[in-house]
Image (tube, rainbow over all chains, first blue to last red; front, side):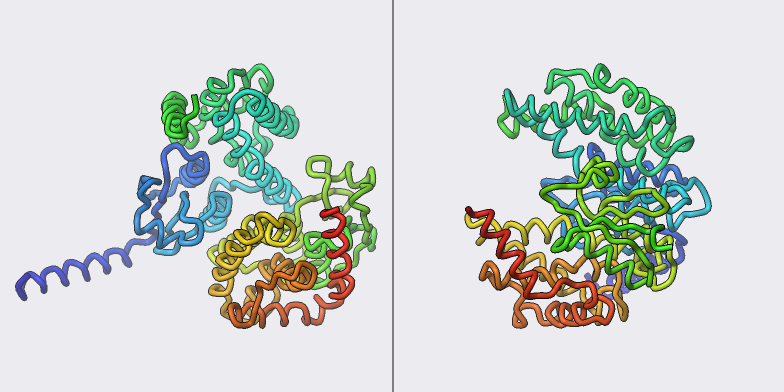
Length: 241
Length: 217
């Protein structure tokens, strides 16, 4: 590169930096299309009407940016807000709620209700992913046990929902956001587990359909058939018949 | 008005102690109920039917479970001596490290001390995890100049880990490898409020030794 080219490059880079600083709110989401955890963040950002740049990660070949922004877990989702990274989906959702607090509150205002919302979101985090994964990665007796545990957890959640339209009561909120991403995985769980979630938890399926009527949800969830195909490929990779 | 706030805990449980610490830091009067974890009270089961564990906080007859959920509730209800920062990004960082300690460090500690087969691998893992915490420490406490959420959740590292050293003979938190964490641990256990509620080191060692022996028999 000659001197002129070098100067031009430096000018362009400096201008890029100045433009970056001038932008009020730069929001980037590092995500993976099928992740029910990434979906939580997409939904929260959509609920708040926040413009952001979506970056799809190849989890077999993680980007330098992801490894820099989440060096400890190296996982998605990661939200990068004006250059500062936030990891862990439920932590990100709470962050989004606290920063963009002028509209669409995601957590209740009452401290006790808020604590209950955190409790149930924590329950979903502790119980749902592994139980669901066990349903499509095992067979025979192991799978039967996995299905029992999975449905048991869903039934507890269904009881908690009760007759409310959403876990948040009249409005869609934190616990709804924590759980709804799993609903686009139900078809895959049902097919590989050979069972019907609707038969066991009809109220929960009704709740999921209600949530899907919201644009923030329908635009954020993956298509259940594509999720099924993804899980199918994963099973092949793992050598599961 | 001490009956307004009740804590169901268990001696020797780091998780239930966290709530004692938070309540004491904020100067809140409360009624403590000791639970026998091998013979749980019907009240505990009623208040925490999902996990059936301690700690459970009951405030105005409304129960809450899960130590980190309880800590945030306490912080939001009693605003003196804040244990979480005000800034959303700093709050997110505090929550991240608190989760890191419970989701990653705690299982590794458990395996490193209780499981003979998986011990070596768990020790290696724990050392790697503690390095992240070592690097994160900038001040006297994770909370800055005062004890905060991460310090309280870190009680298992500050007080239980050194006790487990004695019991299982596996030393991980050395001055050589973790100078900042060791100093922090010392600051934490000697903090004027924390040391009032912390179980005595000797009693804790005896308690943990008992449990280790009854597990292996």
